[in-house]
Length: 161
Ligand code: SLL
Image (cartoon, rainbow, N blue to C red):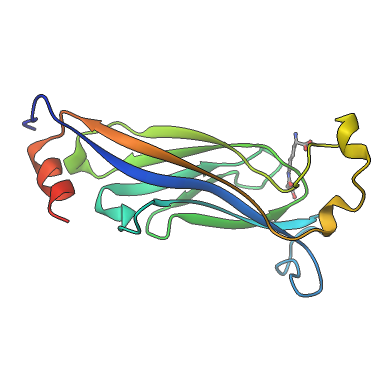
C-alpha cells in the first residue's frame, strides 16, 4: 500500500479501568465466585468521542491467569470488558488496526486498580481500614496513537472526520 512520507497522524485515546466495591446495590454478576470483592470495567476509547472502530479492528485484553479464558477479545465498539475479581494485576491491552492502516498491533499495559490506597504490604496503608468500602476507583490514562507515514487510504480515513 502506498504511504505518505513526511506525515504522521496522532489519535488521542484514553484507556484504563474503573472499579466498584461489591455492595447490596452493586451485587456480583450471577455465577461469579463469592470471593470477588469488586466489579470492574476495562476500556479503550477515543479521547474526543470519535468512534475508535474507524481504525481499530479489535482489542484483546490479556487478564491475569487466575481468570478462566484469560484472553478476552472485543471485536466491536465499545471496546470494553466488564468483569469481577478480588485482586489487582497488570493487563496487556492489544490493539489491532483495520487492514487499510497497514499497521502492526500495538500493546498497552495497564495496572488494573481496585483500591484507592497502596496494597496492604505498604505500611502506610495499614492505617486505612475498610478500604473496599469506599466508592468507585478509577485509573485512566491519556495517550496518543501515532501513525507515521500513513497509507493513503488511512490518511483519507483519519482526515475525513
Ligand atoms: C494479587 N498478583 O495477588 C495479584 C493477582 C489476581 C486477581 C491478582 C480473579 C480470580 C478468579 C482475580 O481477581 N484475580 O476468580 O479467577 O493481588
